[in-house]
Image (cartoon, rainbow, N blue to C red; front, side, top):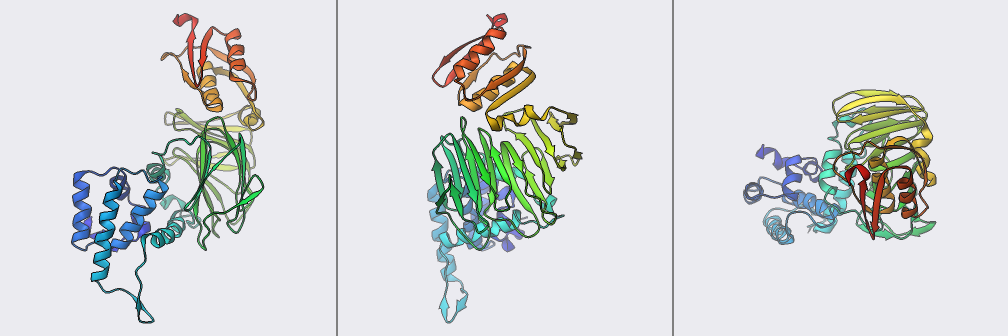
Length: 398
């Protein structure tokens, strides 16, 4: 397949699994492969370096390839460009620096994967490539907003972000400076544990992000569809638009709607993913190719590769927006895992499940110790809370 790289543009590199994998996790074999293409002029050097620069910027400048390598490559590419004929305009030669190429690439990338025409969405390879680029980044300590080359850490337990139709951004009703372009700029909002955020998208769609969640979105949507990427838990009120379906992509499931409200949960450390429809209608699709049309008041659950649908009490799944956690016959381990996200406390629990289930309601604005004390009074759970860790035991484990 070496010969096909000759015609690759930067957006093609960013859609190539081998390129992404070897840029983030290089091996001696992959180093020899790419070096041979560069030395033998069987690759567009500028497109290659632009794609790599984009990966480095999105990945927080922490890929597996050392900075020295990018410097060596760029010097080699600069020399190669100088030795070849360059495009002329008005008699002058133009050589674009990396920063300009990377800025243009941001628009190319979004045009390629965030403005996919309706009916062609499945041609996009899905969440896996974005997980490969973004997955190595640690969870931030504060709410983090990234727009193009602009990165901001936002203070507060609950942050409000509004993206205007022209790409403008307001945080807690205050305008902020971000990267703006004639093409959509890829942006992300990442919420750490013990924090929450609200995000208003350019089309008027409202998103509520729970603790430990991420949303990746363009600065504005195209003419044919609206597409975002989600990890964690998000409640969405989608602005209705018959001509532009709204697509939510995750590592496990994809959701397509025109205008509706629903809750989606897809944490990478959870063994399940689900969607609960509040009103309207939506279509859920999974990697195996199955599709499900969901009705209001129903939950789509994907667990261990098995999909199921059942009728549920909606309040149980959306009350977290109001700072309340409702649970019914819930394994106590699940309750403790959710509390660990809300309060950013590591729960050290026995390896074996206790078999204890609980029903009730917790007010998430209360102190964690108060909530744990309440659980210990109605179960055999015992705990020791120390700083950012909690050690859990059950009487049958003592």
